[in-house]
Amino acid sequence: MTSPEFTDPHAIAHDAADAIRSRLSLASVDMGLVLGSGWSAGIDRLGTVLGRLPLGELPGFSTPVVAGHGGDLVAVALPTGKTAVVLTGRTHLYEGRGVEPVVHGVRTIAALGASTMILTNGCGGLDPSWGPGTVVAISDHINLTGVTPLRGATFIDMSKAWTPSLLEVVERIAPGIPTGVYAQFRGPQYETPAEVRMARIIGADLVGMSTALEAIAAREAGLDLLGLSLVTNHAAGVTDAPLNHAEVIAAGEEAAPRLASLLADITAAI
Image 1: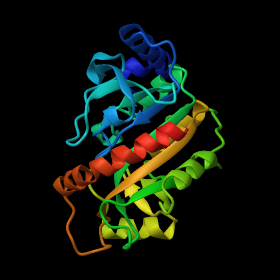
Image 2: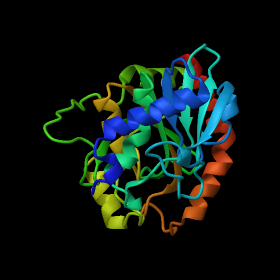
Image 3: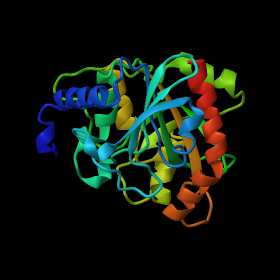
Image 4: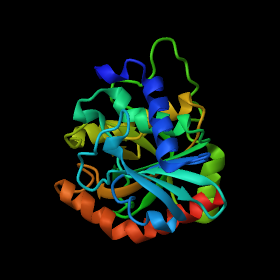
């Protein structure tokens, strides 16, 4: 399904970029971040906030509907002298708006001239040793949604979708952070134990309902890409515990100070 306003998704991304430049008086943007569950706290730790806009006021964006997500676009001057644009929420495929709104934030950040994209999320972990609060750097992904943001014969090389040099930055900043493969399901229901077993068999270490589609759009735009997942719960069947979104939010809130420090260190090193 394609939303009528996204007949030309790249044009609407440029419209949004023009609105952001105008309203925040941005001369240039170097980096973009999309902050998922647990990651939105502590934006001021990244640097000096230059301005903030509600996402729902910008062309092509909607106010996030998921509890635990923010709803703003924030421009930040990093200590390195670079400028970052941070989205404190995202649109998910399960909202039924179509795939273009899901990747609109990434395409808008690319239209602003950024060269680097950092995608974060809260997810379920398949490794029993990765308890809630574990941060995992994404080394690869599996798109299980059945859709793509690409149209027509748009052949994008995904062999190194997640930029190796950025994974090296994470290892240097926080030695010992594990890497893993993220599988995106469509949602909004959590995965069944059988689906989790399938994901493990095909190579996944993490499961969630975001990020992979955004990664495809980021690679289409030529952005260097880093992904960070916060394990908020064990995936279904890994333990006997039932899943609920309140626990996802609680795990994110508990980890928030540590996540803010990690993001600040990483963005300062890129």
